[in-house]
Each structure stands twice: as structure tokens, then as C-alpha cells.
Length: 337
Picture 1 (tube, rainbow, N blue to C red):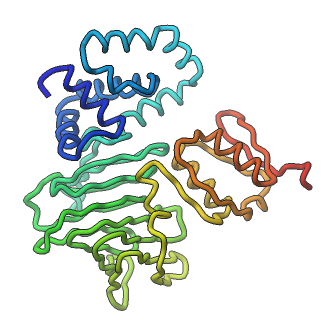
Picture 2 (cartoon, helix red, strand yellow; picture 1 turned 135 degrees about the horizontal axis):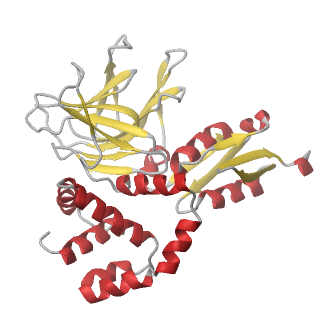
Picture 3 (spheres, rainbow, N blue to C red; picture 1 turned 45 degrees about the horizontal axis):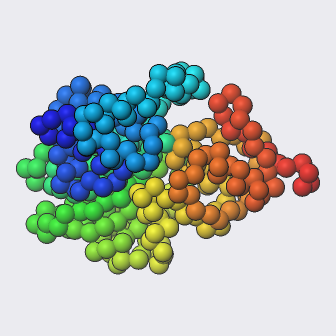
């Protein structure tokens, strides 16, 4: 990336989803080089989100780029910021830095005896991050998740520590297995595509296999009587309370579509759906009537805003919602009682 023009074009290609994996890694490395690069990436993304649909054509020349900046006029920018409270502006800036994540942009070193030399990447609520690890493994990190890993390629082990949810496409290396450590069990693979969900607040820990083969083994906190091997299309579920574990066949896209900015849920109770929406959109949702939480809902979320989703649910279930003090309040539709 030798010129501002090529950097702009590359960033925009990343934002509209047309960047190849090798180019993505180069962009990640460039952004991680300095704070100035990180801020430039964030500024371009902020402008891109407010731009017209054909933004990818704008970066062709410096002259056209200048026109683009003028199109996002001062008045428009002021209106945007007037619509946001201070906390929303801070949150929006944080999300910009992480969506389509750059490896090493915002990381923290862990210096405990077990984690010396490790760093962490965080996907805050309301965003999904993407990264490429040192061994070329591709990772999507779901909202509200953390991944600790070593940035070095010469480690004897390939291992990461997950809190939350992540999808992995692991580079094959039979001599050096890849291990995902969760609080309850370890997932070991040599090369495959799979999803691990282990949020602290969830009642279950799940691993869903799309391609290849994974092996579920004991961790320091949880001992299995024997390791469990999964085949494509299978999912292992561990109930945290009962400590019972079972394997089932599933439609894997129901559990992995989130990495493509799409959520699919079938007959999900409203309690689970609210947790999902809070993570995805970075909002707070409060329910006044507890029996509402037993309602069930099926649907698909792609590009809808949180208000779009709430309006759809309101028309489907006997509920009403309002926004109060930057929080979504849900209660029963009294007309239905």
C-alpha cells in the first residue's frame, strides 16, 4: 500500500466485502503498524457508512475522493452527531475499530503465568470481528466475545482461549493440532471449519462442525469420561448446570450464519432472542412482564435495524415496545389481554 489512493481503495473493498483473504491480511498488517493508520481506517469506515451505495467507485481518483468527502457535507455530519448522545458516539467509534477487525489494533497483553506472550482481540456488543491468526487460520469473532492467542508462529502449540462465540477455518497441520480452550471443554482439530459458542451467561456450551473433524476433550475445570469425535453436521451440547453432554444432528447454517451478518432462529423463546439482539445490536432491552419471555418466535435477520426487528416482532407477538432512556422497554399488548 504505497499511496493514499490504494489504501482508500483497499479499505473500501474490505468494507463492501470484495477483498480477498491475502489482501485482507496485508490491510490488517498496515492498520496494526501505527495509531495513525488505525484512525485513518476508522475515519474511512465512518464516512463509508454514511455514503451512497456506489462508494467503491469513489476511490478511483483523488478528485472523485474529494467529491465524496464534500458529499458528506458539514451539515449532514452535524445532524448525525446531534442525533447521537455522547455514549452512542463513543460506542460507535469503538465499533468502527472492530467491525471487519484488524489483527492487533486493540489488543491487551496477558502476563499471568499461563498466558505470557498472549494477546486478546475483543468484539464488543453490536459488532462482529474478523482476523487471521499467525498460522493463517481465519476467525470470525461474534459480538461480546474475546479471543486470546499467541501472535507468534514458532510456538509448539496452536491454541486459543475463547470467551463467547467464534467460527474457525483452521489451516491443516497434522503435526501441530489446533486447540480451542473454553471454560468447560477443549476442542482439538488438525484442519476444519467449526463454530464454538461459550458465553459465560449462557446455560449451554455448543460446538458445531461444518467440515472436517473435531475432538472434544477434558479441560482443567471439566473432565469427560472419554473424548468425543464429531462428524460434519453434528453438534455437541453441554448443559452447564447438569453437566450432561449430548451430540445431535443439526442444520449448521442455523448456528454459523451470524458470521455472514445473518441470524436465523426457529421457535426461539423471547428470553433467548432478547440476549441475541442485545449482543448483535449493542442495546439494552428490559421486559416488564416475565411471562412474555416464554413466547416463541421464528425469523431471519439480515440487514434490518433493531427498530425494524422490534416492529416485526410487535406485529407477530402480543407485545408492545417503546424506547426510554436509551433502553428498549417491552411489555404486553394490553389490547390482546
